[in-house]
Amino acid sequence: MTPQIPGYLLSFESIVRLLVTIIALGLIWLGAARMPASAKSRYVTAGVLSAAPIGWVAVAQYLGAANTYFAAADTAVPTVLFGLLIPLAVASIALWRSESIARLVSAIPLHWLVAAQVYRVAGGIFLVLWADGRLPWQFALPAGIGDVTTGIVAVVVAALLARNVIGAHRATYAWCLFGIADLVVAVTMGAMTSPGRAHLLAFETPNLLVTAYPLVMVPTFAVPLALMLHGLVLWRLRRGAASAERLAAA
Image 1 (cartoon, rainbow, N blue to C red):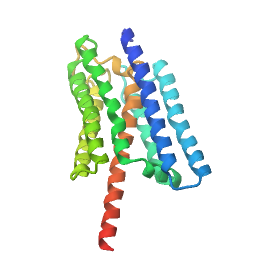
Image 2 (tube, rainbow, N blue to C red):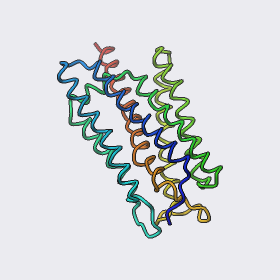
Image 3 (spheres, rainbow, N blue to C red):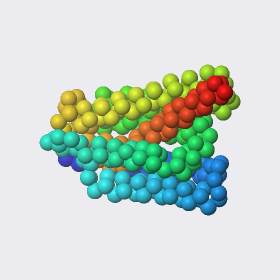
């Protein structure tokens, strides 16, 4: 049974999706402007990377609107997992295999990679939908509170990094781990409250919205992007620590 979609959710998701896409493109071109390479190489790499999120969000929207990911009671493996995991796999392979992409990502200021996740405050919509009786509390409360907290703290941690405050890197590690844990909990609770083999909670008010359009754009676009950003921040922190150790040894 397809749930009734409130009009405010459609408007809210459209605005947030546009803003998140702009943030992703902004990070790409910020890195391209600082990337140590020829102008042609910078523009080509940035152009290819820019096409990726635009194509990704278009495909996610098309599949979501076609109810491709809508959960059914007899679903053994939720199809929405493919929408979440495939973009992560593609991004990991691209970073691993492409030296140009790695150079561009390395050129993005670390504090901007962190600050980009301010969009997570939009997760407060889960709390609104719970208050409206459209989402079970077992999913909405941890997902909504965790996302809002992550988005707000992202600005604080980014400011610490920008000012090079002592302990800023430790704070960034802690923020990353919290943000990743929040996403894991949200995905887990989403599966446990939705129709399917993993449905263990919220039988009276099942989580029908999370795999229906437009809210399905969260697990198929917003969540994978957040995990990518967390992964890039951790990758950059590790590379920075390795460089510092080499300089200390020298």
